[in-house]
Amino acid sequence: MRRFTEGLHGYVVAVLVCLAGVGLFLLVTPRGQAEYIPKRDYSITVANFARTVPYTVWEPEQDPEGWIPNSNRIADGENGAKVLHLGYATAEREHAMFIQSDEKPAAEFANRMANSDKSVGTQQVGGETWERRFREDKKQRTLIRVLPDVTLVVTGTADWPELGQLAATLRERPKSVT
Image (cartoon, rainbow, N blue to C red; front, side):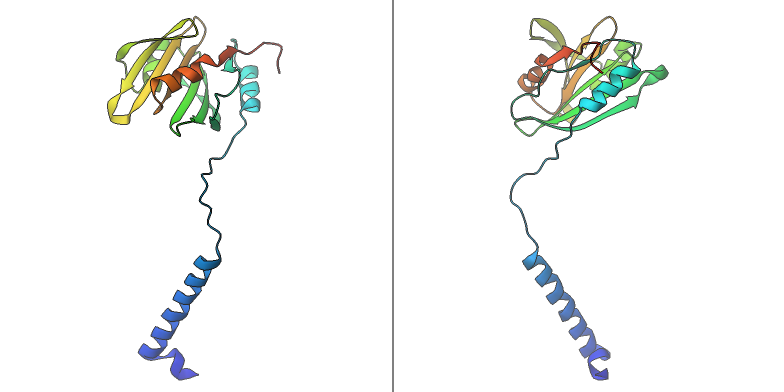
């Protein structure tokens, strides 16, 4: 037995046993070919956010067809403001995110979320005008709508029509909903 565990011969045998084990593992391990994007329900996060802020919260009335909500969080903004982030994988499998906050000044918040302070025009969504921003090096497009008490931002690598699709679903959350 000792001659199998010593010297070059023992080393070669050990390597072959390890490779056989790895090969067997790879052979029996199931591999799915289907895409998997985890779906994250954001309803509780939005409800918690609505309880912590003094203004009317906006939320998607329904998710756009084929989109998968895959992230949500409440973050601390500047000067004690809270920031809600809802992330999606779009139907085209790009990234889109809806962000809102009452952080002041609103222009600085919008600049930070868009990673740009340069407007590239406007876009009409549901009869409302949204400002467009584009950061080429990150392929990041952003729609911004500044309201008196909250700033709404829709941003991501999705194209303008997809970002507009998300912006079109946004509605004010009724205050009575808890």
